[in-house]
Image 1 (tube, each protein chain N blue to C red):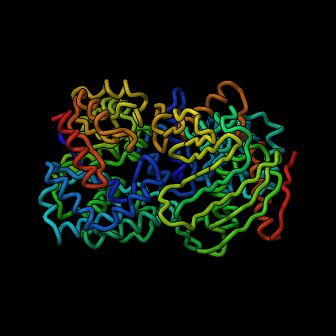
Image 2: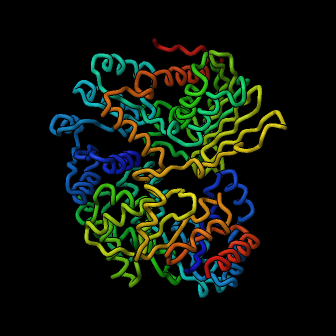
Length: 334
Length: 285
């Protein structure tokens, strides 16, 4: 029960006809706090016991990354629907083992790429699909957040547990958006940098090429100053104009000066719609509501495990390229 | 209706965009400049200062105390805990180490015997005492300032009401009343849900700080629903310009129709202060 565990538990408990009844954590202090202060939530130090002894419909997995695949597999084998926080696993090979199990068990599953539920990025998808800036010529994008890394302090800075640094932790969201907007990435040439500690990279720059021929320059970094919050930005150039989109706003610059200037900027404030509960931002609520509705309707979501392994194929290729110092093709597992 | 000054723009927080936050950070660097604006705002009649208990606060307070008379002019409305600081510490060090570190800051100064060295048993023995100590630690930098209402941060309030955690809310409110003889308050992004929950728990509704603006930004589940719940409650509006998106005129026109106790605004320059406060006076007082 870290930050994301508490966030999802609180949101789920506020969704109509959903009740959180059990939580698992190796830290007894956290479990005691929850058990003592809530009336119906039981704590387990062993998640397998929780899966076996509690009468659950679904499970949220918000553990350190190295535990994701095993817990998700244990849920699927018991025919429990599950949501797993991003990234799905440490490598695409690890994710593949889960895909085999999922194919045998028909459970609704989702990986937490919350940016797809963020209003400005949804708007960008809508505008791109409508061809508002014509044919896409190139993309420049970044995800930045000031983060001080200290050796050995958290699972996030231990490659064995996290799978990598800023690319797999933060940059993974941006890879998801790129695949959503522009389709599969064909090849990558990546450069990882280690400014703060040696175990995981804190900066990565990548030149990418999409299968449809669009070139893209990508950057993910923790090693920046004055980025208090995570900031994701895409600048997309098309034959008719440009779109700049980030977490706060979306701006369209048309090439044609005669083009009406109305509706050329959308702030998150104007795109905001109330949600049943807002804790960490409405996008997390909408993400969880979508997952619950999918279970209720017996429908698989697009952001499922099978899709998410594509993201890991891209990440694997970037890490490989930064070692070989060569352009690498992305190997998707079909 | 009272006007309160919020501290967000002073510390690089801008809800319109992060680009703008960084630009303003460059303009507003230094406690001298912040104090200057606060003096100007006080001259225009504002006497309340809403602050979050982040690490820079103690330096600002020290500056105000030693170099200005601002502590005499302003009543503080602290919001605690500094949630982002807690989250980063817990993410980095795990919950036990983070708690030990936070509490050890206060152990000497509060005269408490916090000697548990990361012992789970000790920490979980008395959650009530633990929460009270966390509150005391958060309020340490504000020892020398006049405080009016002490608020619980919206992330904590909203987590508690969603998970059905009555005790932490009660403990917070009681501790502020008993230990500090002050009024407790709750910040929320889910105003109607909070009021309903307090009724269900039979807790007297304290002062609530929550979003009110004409476009319904961060008003959940909807603007209309939030408006219905103001009635006889003591409500302080925040986010009145929808994070800098709206002009003071259109916001205050809307706010003037609501039965609110106070409004919190963020100010980044003297010019901005003059325009905003003039507009407030025109529409509201």
